[in-house]
Length: 179
Image 1 (cartoon, rainbow, N blue to C red):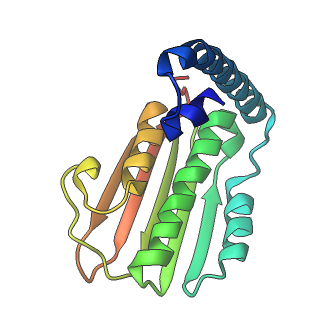
Image 2 (tube, rainbow, N blue to C red):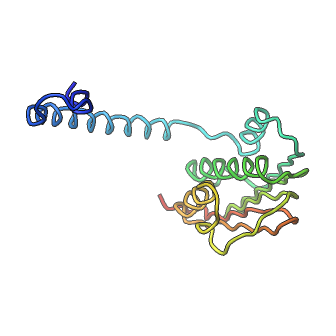
Image 3 (cartoon, helix red, strand yellow):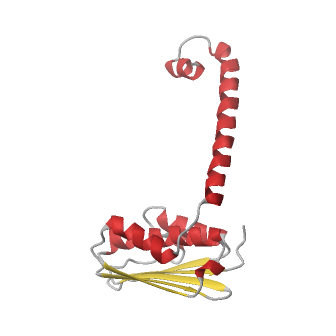
């Protein structure tokens, strides 16, 4: 009620101060509770195998391009957090291919070794002028978000592209992930 009165510019704002303090405290407690709940959901959720998760996501997308997914190695060697973040980054890379590349073919490769998890998404689309740094590319925040997710896990993300030659996104993640 106090916030509503302030928005309307009604009444003496000094009288609203105690109500605002109570509202601020309640909102802070609600935000902390939400963080706890979301954290519990992340810990309790199970990430399906990457091929299965991507195929399920692609089924809803009904892509115009032919998408092939090749997975080798035992991806369960990677921590759950690593596999979940990898799926999210691969999904974003595929979304970019399907939305912007005009590709006929998209190949997704995931390979797990004893020490590394390597993934690559490559398309035969229109490409773009790739900047030196992912953070310097123009457009939305998708590429920066992908890079941030991978770097937070101690890995690296590389993007290569040239106009008319398609685009690739490479991901290298160590299996001893920083948490």
